[in-house]
Amino acid sequence: MPKKKAAAGSSKAPRIRHWLFKSEPDAFSWEMLKARGTRGEPWDGVRNYQARNNMRAMRVGDLGFFYHSQEGKEIVGIVEVIAPAHPDPTDDTGTWECVDVKAVTDMPRPVTLAEAKARPGLAGMALVTSTRLSVQPVTAEEWDVICRMGGLDPKRIKALAKSE
Image (cartoon, rainbow, N blue to C red):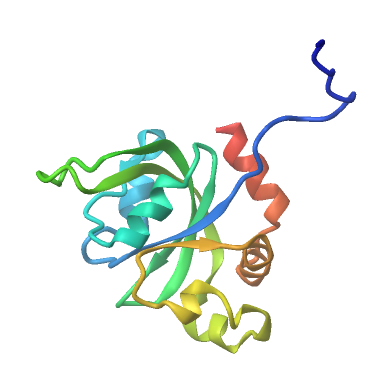
């Protein structure tokens, strides 16, 4: 049976998914990730099964928020997944995996946890409901709201990530 041709203008490119990566700024900060440039950094050291499974679900090109936990408690930047899940180099057991991420852009105005909690449309966001989970999924709607709160156009971010 012959294969059907894709309709003109259609794309089989997978849809970008969104995530949130938490880091304590005294251990690994947004500025440290930006200093790594295009080579990025493994998101290693995660020791939570749900967070590991979230990283296993990521694809190269997915975007995420970089969140400073403990100190600041705010989303400060946008990252891109640049390598799929692979063995965590800090794990000797073979249990843990990580992805590699690179910095894409700063949030012009960081979005605090308090602001996210106060926004009715974000009441179900994992950042608000699962504050201890270090790697979390973000819905497309949550992504758009947080980006706008931080002064970014969500469509522009996708173009920025693809152009680098």
